[in-house]
Length: 82
Ligand SMILES: [Zn+2]
Image 1 (cartoon, rainbow, N blue to C red):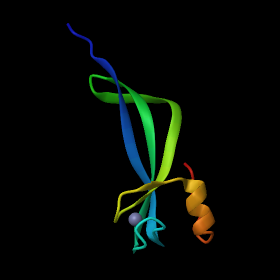
Image 2 (image 1 turned 90 degrees about the vertical axis):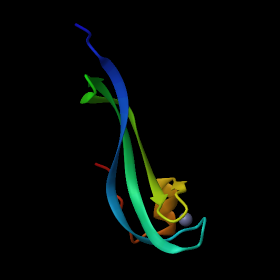
Image 3 (image 1 turned 180 degrees about the vertical axis):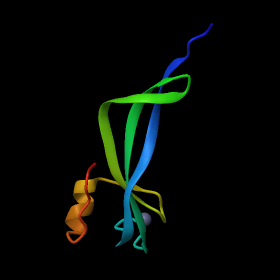
Image 4 (image 1 turned 90 degrees about the horizontal axis):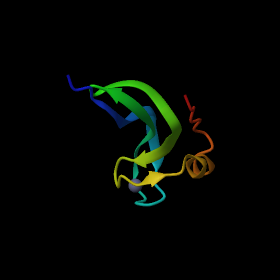
């Protein structure tokens, strides 16, 4: 029997909303995302490990933005890290 262990990065959208992108200058949608690394067993994620990466992605130009930078530009939005 072959036992399959592995790792996988899973991207989860924590929040979304509207903003004016500082890169493409379009009033569009943003998505606040988080990537977690998981250990997998037969391709099924078992538990997460390591540091989680979070970023805000513009849905127009797909540029990932630093959440701190995003908060400075959009102080009314409150990104909640989960
Ligand atoms: Zn953009």
